[in-house]
Length: 273
Ligand code: KIV
Image 1 (tube, rainbow, N blue to C red):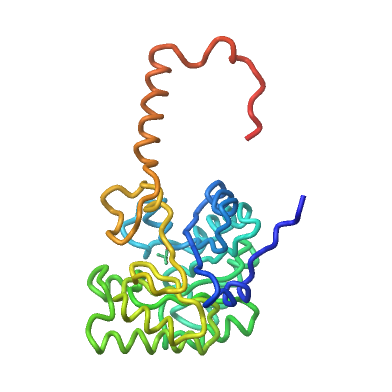
Image 2 (image 1 turned 60 degrees about the vertical axis):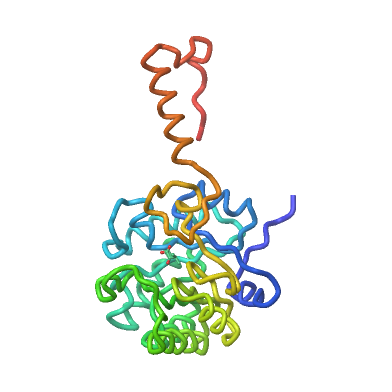
């Protein structure tokens, strides 16, 4: 059996201009295993876990402990994919020391390979400090979900010249600070293409059009588990909500009508999983 070659931040960075990068969020062990088996190089343990898995309305309540818990599960499942963990709200904004402590816990306790933080120019020094300590950083500009209260909602950014210029400056600052990749969220496709051509790090788009170096989707949206909440730009590749509902109903009916368990399989050895 050949050993799995682990993706590293420098290898991801080197994909720019050579291969488009497919990234998905993952929040648990089985999803990480499958993502890895499918050959995706990047698994993002996004703080979108708050909405996708924990039932929150925003990412704001997500704690560092929750991120450690989910990241550790993903890290156990991803043998090759690079595991990037989001720094949750208010774990890096107050100070560089806070950012180092929080990122350090995600790497040491949870097994993250890299961290992601939201924001540009304002966090360039934080990014430099993390990288100087040996922690690769993925940037995130455009729509910043942790700033939803200040933005007044989940709105496309970069529509006015002033806003577009801020997104350009943010992406440039993160590139110069050494981010190995930069997420561009919900900005016009033309702006995303221009930024992608102007920075040396690969850009990973979400709701930012086709001209980024890679794409990221929230796994629930791709699997059809988000219902009406899936954003318009997401593409659904499966309808798991319908499949699960059907399976749960069939199981319920079998139990209620005495078809499960079958007499011949009762009393057999439990499955170790
Ligand atoms: O939290 C998350 O899942 C993200 C992606 C949407 C980029 O930040």
